[in-house]
Structures are given as C-alpha cells and as structure tokens.
Length: 93
Image (cartoon, rainbow, N blue to C red; front, side, top):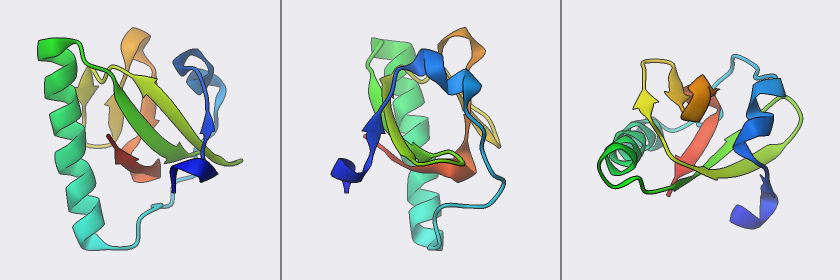
C-alpha cells in the first residue's frame, strides 16, 4: 500500500486542499485510525518520536513523516499549527 503514496515535507501541507469526504469505508478501520493517531500523539509529546501519516488531498495520496502534537475531533495538528483533517487520513505508523 505504501508504494502508492508520494512522500512530502510537512511544510508543503499548508498549501494542500482537502475534500470533506471520508477516505475509509470501514467502521473498524475508522476506530483503529483514531487509536493509532492518539498513540502517535503520545509518542510525539513524550518521546518526540516521528510518525508516518498516510493521507489523501484533492490531488493524490501522500505520506509525511512528522511529529504529531495534538489530535482534535477533526484534525491532526503537526508542528507550527499545520493540520491534516482526520477524515482524509488512511493510517499512521
């Protein structure tokens, strides 16, 4: 799956456009994503560990390796307040 994703720098995320629709179809996968994102937040805040986030904007599938600072109801917040809508994230590792 990861080979379908273009690697980008977190600084370029601000210029991306995100549709409103959900990328995952399965409720189990949606719940697993939420668990994984909260784990990534804990690792980012406690150990400064980076996480790979696989997501899709309005153009293509992308991957960014970064630290997750916060998870809200609707977004994952990265350094400098950059956000990715949760409904556009496939998974995080």
